[in-house]
Structures are given as C-alpha cells and as structure tokens.
Picture 1 (cartoon, rainbow, N blue to C red):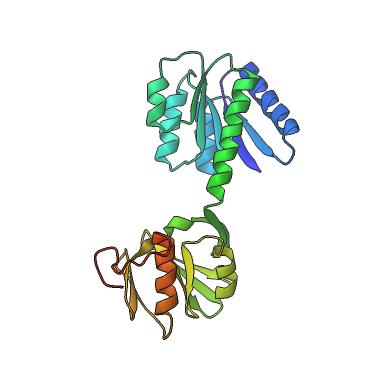
Picture 2: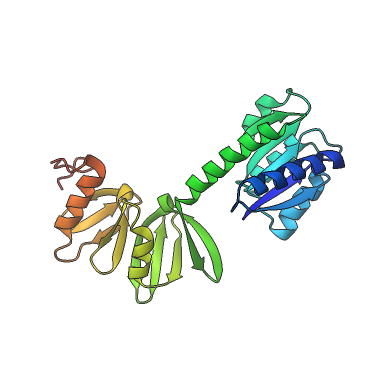
Amino acid sequence: MYLIALCDDEKKELDKAENMLTTYQKEHPGCVFSIKRFGSAQELLQTVREEDYAPDLLLLDIYMPQKTGMLAAQELRNMGSEGRIIFLTSSVDHALEAFGVDASQYLVKPVTQKQLFLVLDKFLDEITEKQKKYLLLRIDGKICRIALEQILSCEAQGKRQCLYLADGSQAIVRMTIAELHRMLEPYEEFVKVGASYIVNLSHIDSINSHEICLDNGRNIFLPRGAYQPLREKYFLYYCGGGQIETGAHGQTL
C-alpha cells in the first residue's frame, strides 16, 4: 500500500485528483493507495509532525493562502521527508524552484488523467525498483527499512545479528545468520565469510590472507580456510573473474 497525500485549498481540485487516483487503482489491480486530503499546507505539515505521517507521494498545489506549497515542500525536506513530490499548479513560474526541493514532476493545471497516469506509472516503477534495494527488518520492536548499500557487514551473536552500518551505527536483529543470509543471498555484493560474518563486497577496501579491511576502517579477521573462496568472489564481483592481484589501494590480494 502506498500513502498518497493531496494538498490543495480548492475542494474541487482535491475531488478531481482523488477521482483520478481511484480510477488508476481500478485499472491497476494490486495497486493500493491510502489517500489523505489536506486543505492547507499548515494542515499537512501539522499531520506530518504530530502523527509521524510519511506519504510516499505528495500531490501539492503551489498557490495556497498563508503558506505556499513550495514553502511546505522545503519544510518537509528539512524534516527529512523522502516522499516524491508532484506539484500541481496554474503557473510555470516556479518550475525552477521545484528542482530545489527534489520534486519529481511539475504539472500545470488543468491536469489531465493521461498526464497523471504517466506520472503514477513512473512513480510505481521507481519505488518498486528502490524497494528491491532495501531490507525490512524488525529492530527494537519496530519494522525498519535498511538500505542495502548502508550495510557494511553483519556479525553473528548467537541468535542475534549485529549489522554494522555506513553511518557508524549498529542495528541488532533477532534471527540466525542463516536466516539473514537467505535474505541477502539474492544480492551479489553480500557474501558469507566463515560461520559468523556476512560482508558487503562493495565496502571492502582490501583483503589479505588474514583479514578484511572495510572502507570505514573496521577490520574483520578471517577464519581458517575463508580467504581463498572470498578472494574468488571478490574478483568475480569486481572483475568478472579476471586475474587481478592488487586491491583497491594496491595491496596484494
């Protein structure tokens, strides 16, 4: 299900947008929208702040009293919102400003069903592709979305796994390393090292027969017999199996 916010000070525009979204759902079985309407930018921002509301897609009018949609978009980005923003407006005057808030589209009213459907097609394609690059994990009782590129390595701690992330933080998940490996196995950059580690090959700075050096400065000591298979997987990942004998900074592998 995708959370979609509609924000416009004119009821007829909200009705029109909602009707088009409903029609799109009917024509695309399996596509489910949860639509929430807002009559002002203030109402939208208050809901985001107080209810931890995080829409996946926001259809936002620019010209509204008291606070414009452009200012609302800037505040949303400052609050950490990563949802896609589609401006629906009566003028092209703010088209360049839209780039400053990373807007996905800028549509001039009256917006046709064909125009909106093309935008929705693109939105669903992009978000589906993006979701493939995330893991959904239960951490501290919450379902969290972790970007694969942020995972440097995983270390087994009994039936708990410690994920070391690129920002220096750690996350503990309650599952076996075999279960975590099954989730990561479809992604070629993740390899199991010995019985206790999973490593992201894209974050390896260098390896030798004794240890892995990650690009955050952390070292992982290799168990007996782990170096050769890891070395081969590293070459396959970066070089297609070519016989290259140096690492990222010239270290012998």
